[in-house]
Length: 389
Image (cartoon, rainbow, N blue to C red; front, top):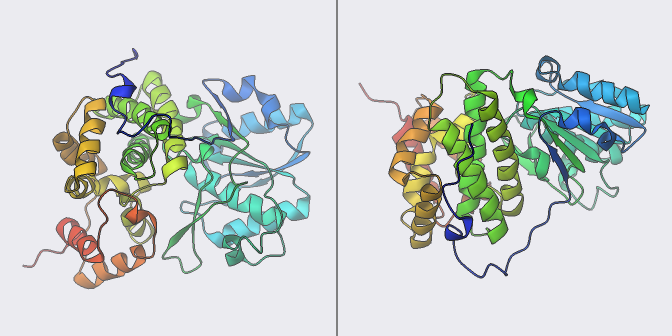
């Protein structure tokens, strides 16, 4: 796919002095087809690795075989922990940490989408602090030891977890997600090889791309954004929109290359800013209703844009963002939810249950326009209220 340059990034940065910005990325990023095979020595960060994966995807795409072959060549031992499900439970991460400590692992390698990579970060902390209880993960005073070093090998193009310190895990009640982060939960190395996404099903590719696009848009609108995060967000958004707006019958290798690098760039952007309110609004329909995360975020795109357009700063930033993608906010409002294809129906009581899970989240305030709980209910009613007969 021929590279398209639609804009000069300086034209779309949202304002403020370009010199009043900072950027921190302690992760070494190695990207491109063959990235892992050509840079196997980047795994040499310990003598025994705990490899963290789901049940199938890391095997099916070839990433697990590539990692174990590289470790064998380097003389590094490893233990496989392949019990990570979507929306990884905190208790599973705790068990992974205990296993890492038992086998003497001093390196954690996360292979997969967001769930295995996020779980790897929590496991690395538990492994270094095996005496703590599960919920003590969130207590910095009890986590006295630094996490084990982490290597991230993404097999989807959406999460960006390979270049940020966030681990989103499901709490023991099974109803809420909570983000763990600390200074040493950044991966030391990210090996981003788009070939691992070639075997992704069509629907999964769309969902993960929608997640990456949400990262780019929410980061760009965040009050915490800087010139550097905005540049990364725009780089990501333009490439993702270019692919998704074609509504392709299939994703070519060139498209997957573009989505892969864009996902990593969007992950860099949210490492500075965090996400906005589509993420916490989406968490409840992911956990309770099984909607894939990227689609859940995109389901709220119309409301995210509409509410932020009520704020002068938000409206101006959204206009710049859409223009950088070569489109308009009007088109985005309809196209993103259409791609999400989320059809749910809730009673008023079910809506209250889902809104109650959101109110404790911090990132719903991370936008020019801050939603009230009443407005969250209004959004849920508009999208999902059961029709009276």
